[in-house]
Length: 286
Image (tube, rainbow, N blue to C red; front, side):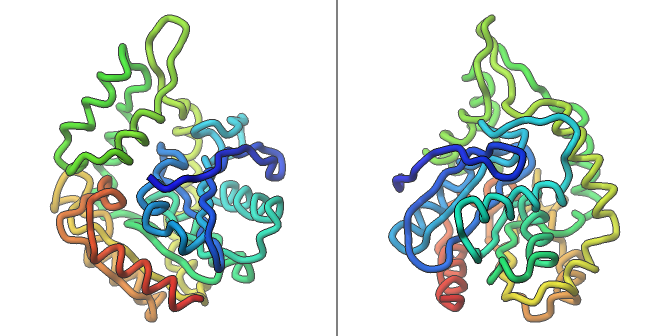
């Protein structure tokens, strides 16, 4: 795995944990998905090693970043990211994110255009298809927060079809999602109230807002879409209809569909097509 620095930074009112890979050119700011953390960027860090600086924060309420009460939602996370860039004295970034992180990246590109020189959306940045949304609602409403052992949690994903092939980076990420309690059990690093507050804010902010955001984006865009969905082809997150709406608002966006990748394995499945598309896009941005 590529080496990176790990530290915490006071960004506005919250202290955020950061994974930071060294490199040249305009940095890439990678924002993880809803219940993940900065280590979701490990495969991207390997790809960009010695090419681009990559900065990957734990969003507030995730990983080892602060977990304040009350303030959540895509707008809040986007403001955290701008405060983080200010703290790190970084003027501009290529904003990229997976799923929920893609929505935050999109919001940054739309409302902070002077800070975002390019946008990479990994299977996100849109309201999912109805089938995918129904599954996500069911998943988060029944989300298990406590596990008897760490291995019980890891095994749940190690054998899941859409997490294949299982990689060292993926195992590192999955293991980092839990923290041991004094009684020996393990709980998720993202608390229930954070999930519920962010989900509610997401619906209120973005139910009809995404098309308006597309029209505000004036930087180059790369959409990396998973061929499969959360469970399979029947619940593709960026379905053809959803993608068509995105391209209507961002007609110059480049798109690439990763064969065999699911929503949850898009970043980790070996894919020369995905990697080549990312590198070519970044080279275009200088």
